[in-house]
Amino acid sequence: MHRFRSVQRAAGAPIVLLMLLSAPGVARQKPDGKSFPFPEKLTYRVEWRMVTAGSAVINVSRNGPNWQTDLHLESSGFVSRFLRVLDTYHVVSDEHFCGINSSLEAREGKRHAVTTMLFDNARHKLSYSEQDFVKNTSDKQEIDIAPCTHETLGALQALRQLTIEQGKTITFPITNGKKMVDAKVEARNPEKITVNDKKYSAFRYEAFIFDNVLYRRKGRLFVWMTDDAERVPVQLQFQMGFPIGNITLQLEKQEKP
Image (cartoon, rainbow, N blue to C red; front, side, top):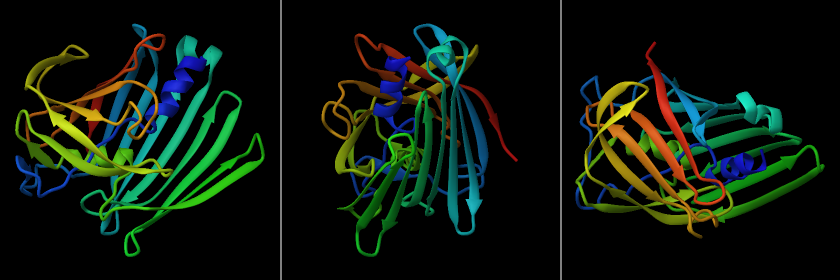
């Protein structure tokens, strides 16, 4: 449906975040063989208006000295009857999940487009390109970026490497390819949360990327991560308000090679 497509575009690849490691109240997880990062596959159920609207699968793997993260987003059920969504997102990041390059092939209804981002971290520049195969149009631009700028999916992975004190707010540079902003993430209260009939102790964060920050649309984004060393994002929720409502991603399965 059009509303489902609008939210999917507004949110970008599910989800956001990063940090300035020097910010007070922020500490990096100590490598111990159990802490993230490590290769894994996370499968999520996408819920919209109390029904299953699709699935999202995130694969994290090694790419030489770097990390590769792949996202496959696909609609299902009644949503697919109105709007077929089949998006594939690929990103290569360094050890701290700072962007190196990314590509997104989006098939949403009649739309078919490919966008790429190339991070020139030496020059602090980002090259963005978009090719629309339906309209037969293309767009290219270059913007300035800060050191260790993240795209949305790499930023989510970077957050997993951090421990942020309750009530603390941190700022970070994040980009969608067309602009870079200093967004902020706030650590909320620890919570007991039930996801797909499984109980977790989790930290809750709010990422401020909507309301003319990175995206114009009004909305809120919350992320729940387990309070153990793995820091698994078990739930993400986009609260978009009327008429779209909430879109929730809930973890169904975590797999390790």
